[in-house]
Image: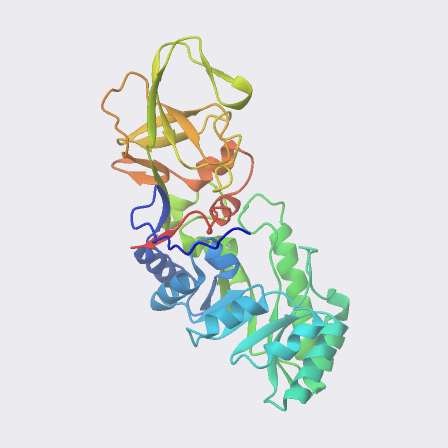
Length: 385
């Protein structure tokens, strides 16, 4: 039998790879969005661990910048936030029926509801807990076709909620599918029209929710008619516009910078090829720097093949070959000033140069949301500045 060994690994205070989170940028973005939405209130969406930035830290910064609500996707996310913050929390998806028992014990959480099973579970949970009536937000599906009650059934469901002493119909809302695209063929206007018809039916029947909301980040920035009583901003809180090319126009400041360091240097001769599959051939001798970050950390494997670059010494340098699980390689040409330990910026700013998460996204045919959410929190520590 192997004798057990006790040892301790101390946290690395100078990691080779890390994500730097600028909380001042988060506050700046919240100030900007709150001003754009006024007099509507701002709900900062911090689901998915704050889009990979850190939910609690981002929430605090957003609240300091003018947000008054927080949005999450899971009951656990709501519980984790409530341990530290006391702002109202909107649960953006109806939880499984069995989770309402836990939800009603978390102060200040407002769940989305849109099914008979969800409403029944909410009523039963309130009765069992003998707690105060639970505020809920009824979601209507006006064209996103993900979740939500059909418009034709919205009035009946609203009346059912309104008649239940265990519940309060605090909110009525929808989600826009193409709000960031001003050339969407009028789809957003049709969604808002469907939403208003449903809302007017409720009001005519004497059911008047206190908070009406429809605008996401795109709606907040581009669609004044969508702002209503509250806006729900996710990606814009993190300084990334919902579509490429909007960041500077919107005045947003990206909050995440992904950094690493050169871990190894070598000279690769002209004609040699590099990395798995040997997809890249060097046309001339080159100094190649290895960087200890790869696709398990969140860098897309095909980024180098798609023309991806990094910043080193304030200059753009191409990634060569496919990104491997833990490492990638960059071509430094004939620059003999590069040293092991030099800082590498994967996306963000270094000196006067900048690479954005949207640049990565467009190269690999995805969106900036997926890029920042995909930076592996178990391998890439966050540093808050």
